Length: 191
Image (cartoon, rainbow, N blue to C red):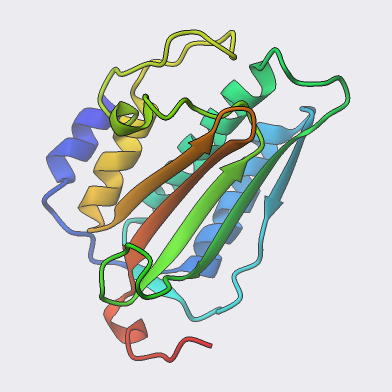
């Protein structure tokens, strides 16, 4: 149902302006409950530029970050190769988009969620955001519904953003989300 609602809104651009540091604060508060009592180190890096802002729907962008962290937890904690006492590390960060690294040319911000989980085979990466696409049970003993990353993809499309997923089997996965800066933020000089 959530995916259907997101798809219905996909062509209606969000009008609110979200300060990224506030989004990260909300995320930190929400994510605390996800990792409580688990063998996980969650590092939510402070946003260096407190003025960074994007046009967006804060509830949807929060859902994107939560979905990515939930995936990292689900598959990272269930891996058979994990050594006892070896914590799963998840790092959530934000930076201004650097020019000429494959992002759109207009000013933007890159949110990232990186983990030290089992990684995803390269052959699955082109299809991983498709609705109901699931990787066969390999390193992880859990199976997802195949909707989480489809939701992420549709929310990012609604925000006129881009998603890039990089992964190395045995080393982890990094999801990067490029979002355009809010109109008032585009004139700021990157430091």
